[in-house]
Image 1 (cartoon, rainbow, N blue to C red):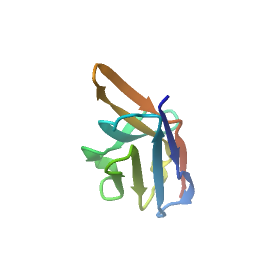
Image 2: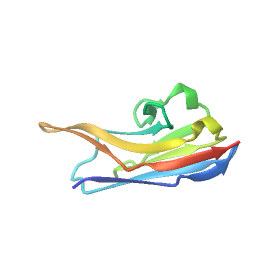
Image 3: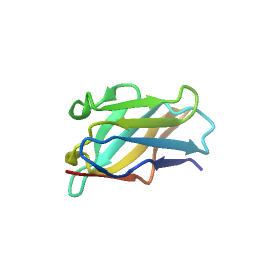
Length: 115
């Protein structure tokens, strides 16, 4: 059974940094793509960063994504955090393996930025 486990969230002040980690277990193949999404209270889940396409425009210049070259792990470095970055951050892995389409999600890690 594939699991994605996020870590690194927490409570920080505006302007500070956090580094989120997502580590996978249970997969026999390398995921086609891994991403970070976030969901703020009352908002839809939105894409923050993808290991192929990069970060979204609203976090460009502050967030970076990097993925381990061989392992199914991905990281999100978040600098100069703002109150609007407060959300639950989710790790996602998706792709196609043979005839199997997969779309895995982690449980999420809370990021709270106080102003």
